Length: 131
Image 1 (cartoon, rainbow, N blue to C red):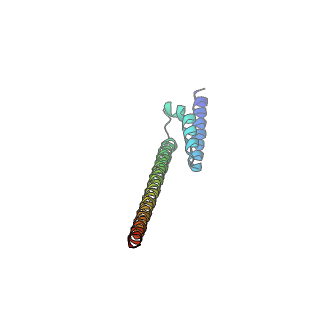
Image 2 (image 1 turned 120 degrees about the horizontal axis):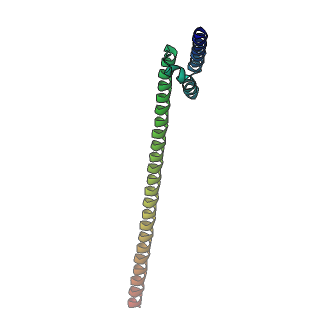
Image 3 (image 1 turned 135 degrees about the horizontal axis):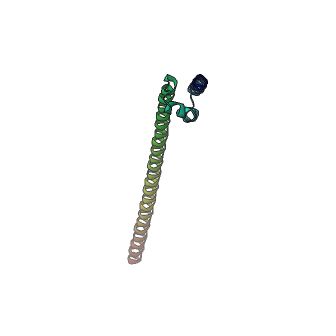
């Protein structure tokens, strides 16, 4: 009976090791997590294996790579938003400058019209005085 239990435990350990190795070979984070969780009870019974340790290391590496990728994406999105805001600010500044230039041109046109009217009035007075 004891030998049967040992044989069953050895078979379970071999199955667990094979499943862990398969998950490691696939290299998918969730698959490794699932395999570790499924076979962690064997490790809790004192059957620690190099494959389980390797699976845990690989899980940690993949999780860290996933965190770094997510952070890089977040930084890229933030950078893109900042660039969009800068572009909008430049466009608003250009529109404001254009509006100011148009207002100055309109004011200069009004001033020129006023000068022309004043000159016409002066010319008319001079003509009236000569007559």
